[in-house]
Image (tube, rainbow, N blue to C red; front, side, top):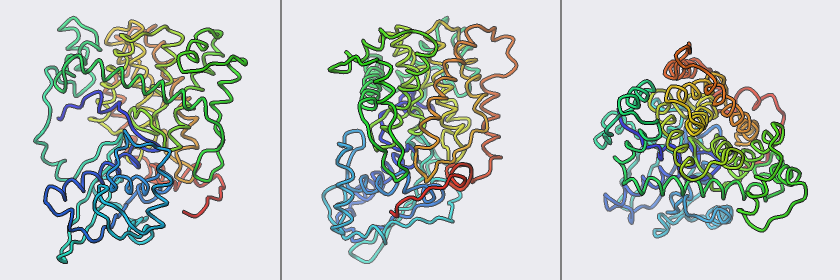
Length: 472
C-alpha cells in the first residue's frame, strides 16, 4: 500500500471544493503536461471537457467549470490572486478564446466545450472527467482523470500500477500499527509521524512546512472574520463570522492579525464563550471557502474549517505554541492518511462522513496528542469523533458548499474537542470499538448509502428546501 504524507492530507488549497475544484484544476494541469511531454501542445486546435457523475451534478455549484478553465490557463491555485478569478472566467466566455498554459490560444465555447454529463458515471469513481483534444493534423487525444477527494487525482492506470510508492521506515497503513511502533520505540505519535515524514523531506523542512500551514490557517480565519456581505452562488447566504467576531470582542478594535488574536486570548474563558469562538473560527474558514478563497484543505475543502477551528481554539485557550502546533498537524495528517487508505475522504464516494467525520477525527487526535494523551488515547479520540459522524450524508443545496456545509464544520469542531476530552478521561484498554473498526464501518456505510446522498444534490436538504438559483 502506498504511504501518504501528512502534508498530502493537510495542504494549501482553494475553495470551494477539494474534489470538485482542486481536483479538476489539477487534472487540467496534468493533461496539458501530458501533451507537452508528447510535444503536441502547440498543435491543439480544440479542447472539450466532459464532466461525469458528481462533477456534473454539482459541478457548477462547486466551481468545477471555473477550476478547469483556470487549470487549462496554466494558473496555480496556491498562488493565484483569487479575487481575479471571476473576471478571468468572464473574459474567456466573452472572447471565446482559451490560452492553454497561458501560451497557446485556441477558440473556446464555454457552452459547447464543457459538457456536463448529468446521467453518466464513469465506472472507476463518481468524480470522473475526460479531456479531449483535436490537433491540427486531424488526429485527437483523450485522457480520463478521477478526483478522489482532498485534491488527489488518479487515472485508472495509476490505480493498477504504482511505481513511485514512497517507503517509510515505520509504515502505518492501519491505525493499530501506530501504538505498536510507539511502544516499541518509546515515542509519542507525533514523533513517529515526524520520523516517517523524513521519507519525503528533511526534518527541518517538515517543521517549516507545518508552520507555513499554521500561517495559512491564521490568515484564512482572519480574512473570514473581517468580511461581510453575501456569499456567491445565488442562495443569498449571509456571512456571519464577522458579526459574531464583533459581538464576542464587545467593541474592541485591532489593527492586524496578531492584535486580534491577543484580544481573543483576553476574552472570557467560559464554556459558552469558547463554544462561540470555535464556531466563529470554523464559519470564517468555510465562508472563505465558499467564496473561492484560499484555505487549508484538511482533508477536504468542504471540511476545511474543522482543523483550523480546533487548532485556533488550542492556540488561544489552551496556550498551544509552535512545538505543539507542529505535533498537532503531524498527528492530524497521519490520521487522515489512515482514512484515505482504508476508506475514502470523498463525499462523492462516502457522503459527508468522509469529509466532516474524517476532519473531526483528525482534529480530535491532534488535540488529544498535544494535551498529553497516550498513543491509545489519541486513536480513541479519533474513533469517538468518527463514531458520531457515521452515516452523515452530503446533500448541498444547489450544489453549493454553503448549506449545510458551513454550519456542519462548527459541529465537527465541537465534536472533535469533546471526543479528545472524553478519550483523555478514559481507559482505552476498556474501549469496545477500535479506530480501525470504525473506519471499516464507515466504509461499509459509504458503500450502502444511496448515491443521491453522495454529493449529487438529488436528495435530503438539496431537494427539500426550495430555492431559485440563477441560470449559469
